[in-house]
Image 1: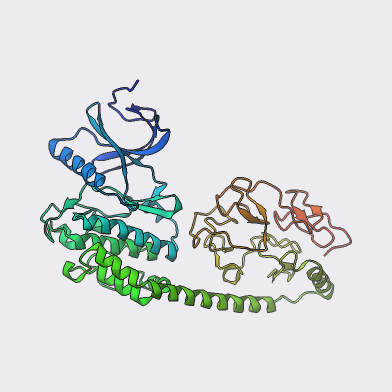
Image 2: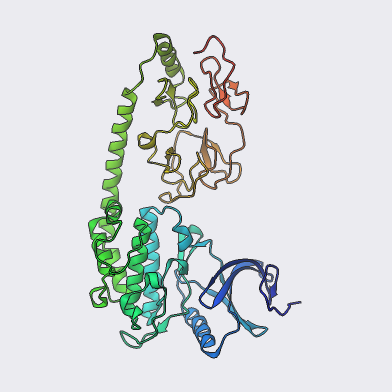
Amino acid sequence: MTQAFSRLQRGTRIGKYRLESHVASGGFAEVWKARDTVERAWVALKIPPNLNSEEEQLFLEEIRLSAMFEHPNILRIRNADRIHGRYVIASDLAIESLDERLTRRIGARRALSYTRQILAGLTHAHQHRVIHRDLKPSNLMLFSGDRLKIADFGLAKVAMRTMISATGSGTLLYLAPEQAHGYPCFASDVFSVGLIVYQMLTGYLPHWPFEWPFEGHDTLRSKVPEVFGNWLRKATRPEHHRRFRTAPEMLGAFDRMESAIRRFESRKKRQSAGARHSRNRSRRRRRPVVGAWREVRFREFERAYGKKLFLRFHCPDCGGPISEHMSNCPWCGAGGLHLGEDTEFPHYCARCRRGIRDEWHYCPWCWGPGFDGADGEVRPDPRYRGSCRACRGPMIEGMQYCPWCHTKNTRPIRVEELAHRCSRCRGSTHREYWGFCPWCGAAQATQNGAP
């Protein structure tokens, strides 16, 4: 039986919905994660407090405006009802908002994908003569498959003319100058989108007086071609008549840059590959001078296991051959091994400075925050020899965490070519040559007088 509700808390039943956890408070409503007990689906439930007549009219306007949109990039209302004297809106439950996503690094390709989706949804609204008036990262919801949807049309107005007179409502940080003076127009939404895109690509949010170039412009130039910078500059002009007039016009200009963006990405990949190859060759030449006996042992081990164990680098302390996925030098026990910019992977983690691939969602070497891969597609790599026990994603020996789902790897690291086991972590090692475990750094009882 549904109970009347006066105070919202976990477990409260509202009609067919059971509240699970509080998500956010904004505008004039609370948002909860809730369970639809009939359809057995998770939903986002927006519940305002008791409204006065003006607030009630705004809330009903949001419901009616959202109901008129049928677009994959606009958040769909599943149900709207009035229960025990209070309005309730149920919509699809997002994974997170773009505001939350901005706390982690967003790659250029993903930022451009989000940009196009924002513009596609906003184009649909503008074609229906609707100005959103409150575009900001917390109103842009992210779903599985990197799908983005625009939410919260609570401040939207149906525009019968190019510019309408209204209160200076909206979120100040993303507000166009003319909207702050009470005159929002279609170009006001364009301005907000420009600020959001600039923040995604650079990590900086431009501020008044919006004089180009904004802070972080060098970062922008390293990620996108110059023509894209010019596109953003036009979108964020303080004077509304100098911007794109509407989202459809802005989207058309964005699509015309597609070939320039592809050429820029291809050029960056070629330059990155060339620089990485040059660094790796240089690093292989810079081996520390070691004793003759050790040098013989190093060469003997490299001939036998170099290709099988991917021994493409040398310890900076003792000169022993090592692979990039080892945490410690098995010859001298040096810990915290990382190659930084010399990694053979396309990038390296800013936290632990160990190599990462484009498609990985998390650093597999440290418990750092998530980051973007290009598209999440699994690409062949001969170092993939195992798999995650949780998601079955491919893994490389030595990974502490799954790069796909972030599950901690609790199984001993096993390498087919190594016959011995570490006395501490039970990972594979080679006591005939190594004095230390390459995975945990524990000293090993060596055989045959290994150095």
